[in-house]
Image 1 (tube, rainbow, N blue to C red):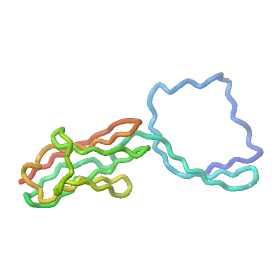
Image 2 (spheres, one colour):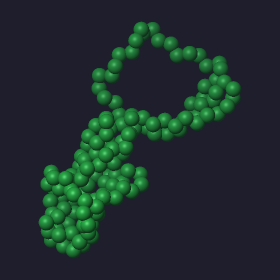
Image 3 (cartoon, one colour):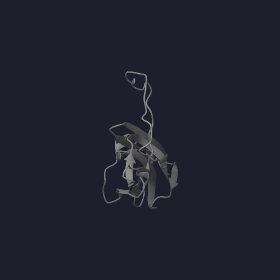
Image 4 (cartoon, helix red, strand yellow):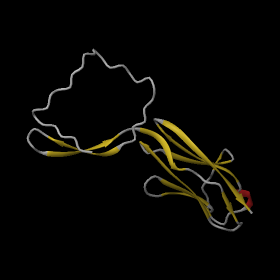
Length: 145
């Protein structure tokens, strides 16, 4: 998106004395660059980062695994600022150990990896994403046979 301002541009005016606050929340998730032509005919690029609550682009899916198999529960979550991610199994935090570990990938991807999955790993998994603008979560069932 490009926006050009020139010295001959008219100012924006309003007959209102003030602007009232929004009654409903608004989702501003645009992230991009805007080109501005300055009066000195210089071109500047301004990075625009709107604040946004977490949103899952790819939620958890139910999975069936065979005992002993390595698995990865994956989500893609965006938000600004970047959300903090929590993993739970049956509403209890998943503790990192030699078989359970979390990796952060690119573009908002997060993976809960389980090495040599066991029947005791079966259950309802929840990925919870939190930032200062909100909290979102998604669930997926893992069944180990």
